[in-house]
Amino acid sequence: MAILRYALYRFATMLLTLVVVSALVFVIINLPPGDYLSNQINELRASGQSAGIAKAEFLRTEYALDRPVYQQYLIWVGFIPGPNGFSGLLQGDFGWSFEFDSPVAEIVGDTLWLTVLVNLAAVLFVYVVALPLGVLAAAKSKTWVDYTSAFVGYIGLATPNFLLALILFYYGNKYFDLPIGGLMDPVFEGEPLGWEKVKSILIHLIVPTFVIGTSGAAGMMQRLRANLLDELGKPYVETAIAKGMGPTRMLTKYPLRMAFNPFVADIGNLLPSMVSGSVLVSVVLGLQTIGPTLLTALKTQDLFLSGFVLMFVALLTLVGTMISDVLLVLLDPRIQYEGRET
Image 1: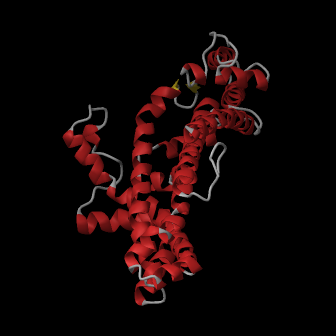
Image 2: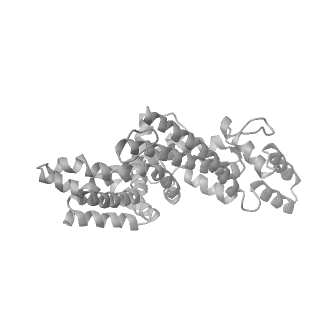
Image 3: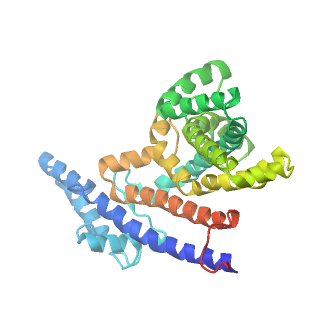
């Protein structure tokens, strides 16, 4: 029951943090002078298009952009009623994209699940690659296995993602007939999910998964190696060896468990960092993820679209952090939480 209380406490903390983050996101987005509609109105006035000005002014009133910033924020979140009553994020209304002239929900609807899919695949790649290589490098320290793993890790950290994307973009198609760009064949866009569409998505995921996950896997492998070497040098390991415990059982029983903490702790920032860090990769590979949409929204000061995308990334961060905190107290008995008996 103690762990359940702790999980509920972390969930409540996450909700409060999300409210604070939403306020910061809204304020930061409004820091640059003007917004999409005011910029558009200035351009229309300069060209003398009165009809367009009337429409832009109507949209400003319709979405409460003519009100003070604090009221705009409260209406956007859904804390107070706006021109159309309570209609904010809490009520499932993500607002209107002025750049694309469509509801935000329609624009991000197809890209959200593809974004989550790509980055979950990249996270899985990170863990599958980093765990065995990190353990092997530590267990075979100062051998050719360790040096080779370190070399591969440094290459992964030093190579920019967009450059790796360009290389695989060309050679993957030339030698392995991998598809160029996108996350599915164009014929499947807008079609219901079926086996052929799933197969197309899985094939298209190969290059993005490798590109986005390479640097994360390299960094995590190095951290796991360093932590595991530190644990292997502690007295309890020497005691276990002196008592005749086998090397494999000794490695997995305590040192690996203690060194595994960074793997769990990184859940909180790995996924959102990949979402934000894959923007250039998404542009280069033509991926239908939320990264290029965020880039366009920020450049054009599209308030509601950029605000929702940033809140989505913040939600990923907070959910991942909550999950990692709960898993850490289950994994490592040295970590204390309120309610645990000592």
